[in-house]
Structure formats: C-alpha cells, structure tokens
Length: 145
Image 1: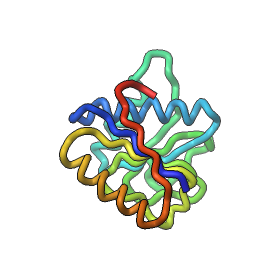
Image 2: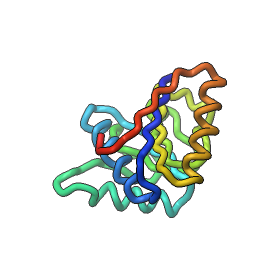
Image 3: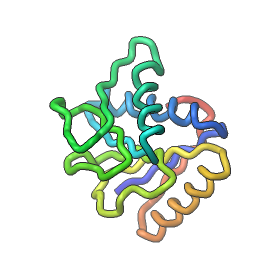
Image 4: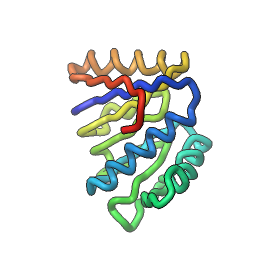
C-alpha cells in the first residue's frame, strides 16, 4: 500500500475539495477509478456538485454511492459508508477518519488543509500508517496537481 499526504496552505474546505476534484480528474483521465471517502451526506453533496462545475469543459463521471454500483466501471464513487469491493484500489480520503483498515487499497491519498481539525486528524492518520509500517510520502502544496 502507498499513502500520499497532500498538505494545503488554506484553512477552508473549498480549496481542499477543488484540489480533490483535480486529483480525481487526473485519476479518471489515467483510465482508473477511485472512491472519494467523505464524512457525511453534506460533504458528499458538495463534492458531487463541485465535480460538475470545478472546471469548464471537464467531465468526470461520478455518483454518490448508496449501495448500488454504476454501470460504467470508471465512474468515480463518493461515499461515507462502506467502500464496495472492486472500488478500493485508490481511496481519496477527505474524511477526518481513517479508511477501513481492511479495504485493501493500493493507494490512499490524504488531503489535509491547514485548519486545526484537519491537521490534528491528519497527524493521527500519519502515525497510524507509520505504525502499520507503510511508507508515507508528504507533499506540501502551493498550487494545483
């Protein structure tokens, strides 16, 4: 498993979700799919809306996961419950918690902003990954991916 932390200089959730959209688009254009793990229905709806509008001309097929898999296998899923089988290879973690430890992810992408809550939760997840013996890569970001 590979874990990558992106640490953003902003303290508000907007730029964090925009950064996530750019990463999700890059994953999609690379022929892969991912699961965007969020905290709740409100955050899922915000990401869902932003994926339609974050950049003119961009199209990233996505849906909020509610127990039913999409017909198109590359559809990006957004959810706050369990992560379905076959959709665990790349997890974009926007939640304050850890992805399920049994998810079997190949890659987990953690996006942290500079707010106190996000940084504290990120530190805890970082320590957890280190305790698992996973190499963690950290990128301090000043710009888009």
